[in-house]
Length: 353
Image (cartoon, rainbow, N blue to C red):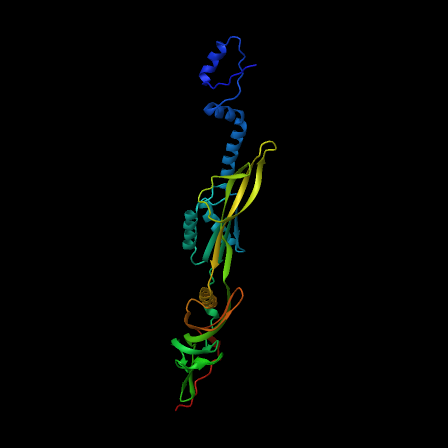
């Protein structure tokens, strides 16, 4: 039995059938664009389902289903909720982008600047979590009427900014914790002439000794706090992300299956991506020592307030370890060393000098 396999245009197929004689003609397969059309037509319902699913998932993943305002202050909760509603942050509204959220936060802080110190709006899945810090209002009626300024820690006095009171310690004097630096009792020839409220700040040099270990090889993985949802189509052990804009360089993913075909090797997942900040280091001995010193300085900066600053530092000891270095750092800091001590009112001595 002889047979011939030929390839012809689709438009010529009907002519061949019409003019055939004694030969049997069998269509084996399609090629090119017509084959693609046939395949798409055969799986049209699956394709339509996939496209509709992607559109629905994309829409739902950008829809707000819940807004939680974390506070026990019902009055502020209502105020913030009302403001957010005006800006479109409420149930069944589309999520806002990063720049819009920043503008909304600025607006809230501006409108309620006397009631809120800071506010954060965090997007987690299909909900927003709103956290804020209420502004603490000082009750001036509770301030001490008569007071000394004393040292709250051992230090050498560096500078003083005194508004009222009688200075009893001078610059470069060494003071111990509890020593009176500025007195609320006003003396003249060792006699009390008046009792006032001493006020002001005293800056002093204090000292910290910090021990830090730093490795030669270092890797840290931290979440940035940013996350998003993407649609993932798995086909033949391959992941294809749909609508995955502004891709993260590194991230942790968690998949939730939406659709899985038991016949075809295909599934549709919602992929939650949490952005990661991965830092790797391979340090020499000198680099490890330098970074240990910087780490010690950062630790001290976290302990001191905004008015304080690091004056000087010295490396006391460096020890080589198998996997890194151990460094002892002595750090000098200029910071506020004063605090107030309540005193009793005393009548002025009637005896005049």
